[in-house]
Length: 234
Image: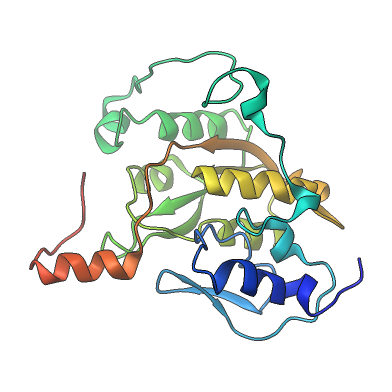
């Protein structure tokens, strides 16, 4: 690829950040020192001269044709897309079930995958110190996984943690994320020059349903105006 001012970082700024349609998935963060995630927002720290355009290729909102995914709506399986089976599930472990949001299924899957050595670590989302400012976290043990169980109500930039883990040589990674983050993972696998190689490190992907992810700062201000304090539990 030949870099130009528009086709690189500048394109991501104009197409996504300036338009206010960033979903804060974190896919563009952790790749290089030019992006960061702070206080619930993706922040541009400096202009980037790199000619790989990974940030543009990964972004689920940039509309980059080279990493576009197939349109599953045309495959005749309705709005949910292709599937093998649909199950209702609940963890058999009462402790896991109690800490989870809807039965602890995701936590149980991660714990089982770790015990069977399918994954060596997992990228999940913790609740943040105040329960309102979640962030990506790399976990390895059942206790660390359970500490991050439950739903999050604000965007978290979780994939920044995945990028850093890959850059640091982490192998056999599991990832739990929202639909926008799962789309970013799909785009990562199609990106140049080393997308397939990087995504070989990801051995398990668990996608969650999503109704919305609120802006952290707006949610914090909303609760403060109503004198509501403490972590959000359910």
